[in-house]
Amino acid sequence: MQFKDRHEAGKALAKALLAYKQLNDAIVLGLPRGGVVMAYEIAVALKLPLDVFLVRKLGVPGQEELAFGAIASGGITYLNEDIVRSCAMSESAKAHMIQQEQKELIRRDQVYRQGREFPDLQDKTVILVDDGIATGATLLAAVRGLRKTQQPDKIITAVPVAPSSAVKKLRSEVDKMICLLIPEFFSSIGQFYVNFEQVEDEEVLQLLKKVTDI
Image (tube, rainbow, N blue to C red; front, side, top):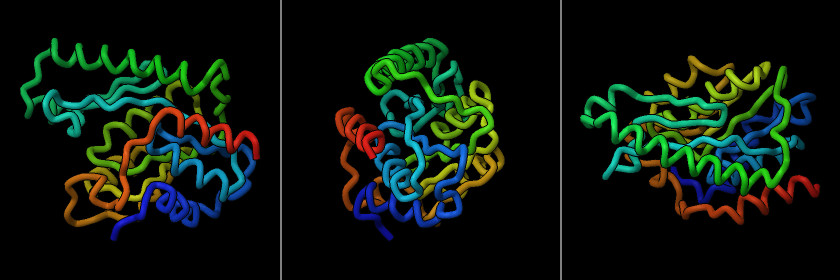
């Protein structure tokens, strides 16, 4: 099965999340950039507020699609030590990548927030959305970052596709996990989309503004 694009996948996820429609003290958070497209469709369908939660994948040098960890807002760093060992990464290489991605995290915070304060999520139900999971490092860092800095009541993760290993890893960390496809053979998230073009900052800003204007 393939989704036409992120918008179609987001609408499919929204149908699986109808139990949360117009739920008091609930919010949809998208992981930039691709996750925000789906989060937008979910927020519109469920009539819930939309925002972003910033997280950056730490890619193995030369194999950037393979994440050895991730960093998230709130000073959270998650490392997959098995991947770090298998790639024989040096401490200096890890430190350089983390520093590089921290700069991008700060840049995106300035671009997407534009002076807006991050919403208060304490005791709220958070629906955390991404456009798919490969290793699970990015979403895991986001979940732990939210737990540590925001103390929400519940965290529901929603993704269109993920390998079974990543689903198992995430389920133990969240209150509920929605995953539409758990394929037996998984090589990349993009293989499950007809259109998986990169999402630009401008599109993220437009989607956030659209929900604000509704």
